[in-house]
View 1 (cartoon, rainbow, N blue to C red):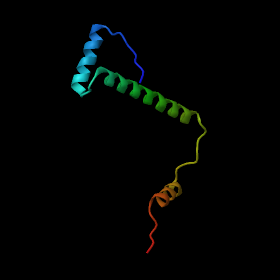
View 2 (spheres, one colour; view 1 turned 90 degrees about the vertical axis):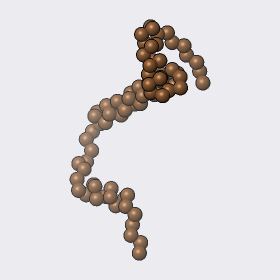
View 3 (spheres, rainbow, N blue to C red; view 1 turned 90 degrees about the horizontal axis):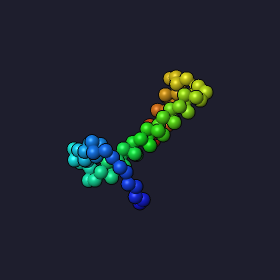
View 4 (cartoon, one colour; view 1 turned 180 degrees about the vertical axis):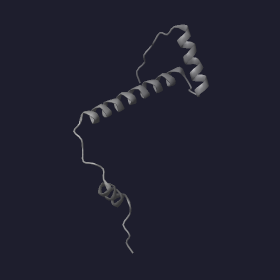
Length: 79
């Protein structure tokens, strides 16, 4: 694992220390890693949503579509 040092104003360091204590993180590094993971996930989701919005419309989800989904997920009756 690589190391990265960051500088924070006292007010932000105090905030991080409070969050570590209040949320049960072992260290400030764990807290910051979690924030970075969440931001990464949020950016990925945003990309997926934008790609979906820019894509051509698909077929309408009608009764036949949902029936086909149900058939795929329900086990067949083999008596």
